[in-house]
Image (tube, rainbow, N blue to C red; front, side, top):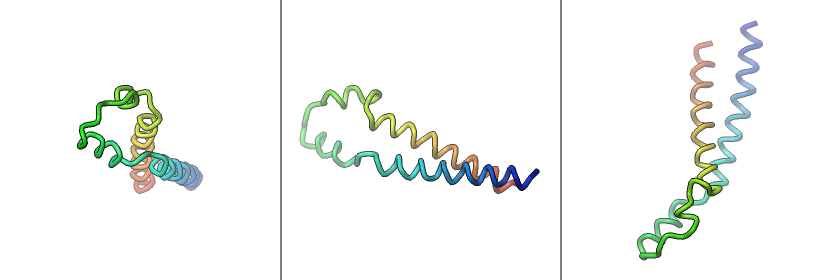
Length: 79
């Protein structure tokens, strides 16, 4: 029973790690926004509506998958 649970959790951890890698890769760089604010460029539509943009969704998904990965790692270590 314990080996089956460990195997299932390991498979879930591999899937979560792949999702985490993909969400980090698909995010846009933070430097592009930094250079615009240094040059004095006004806020764009996407800057004002960041919560609805794709980058915000990817950032939230990255946070959730990172937390899941850490919890799964701790659980697998205990088992």
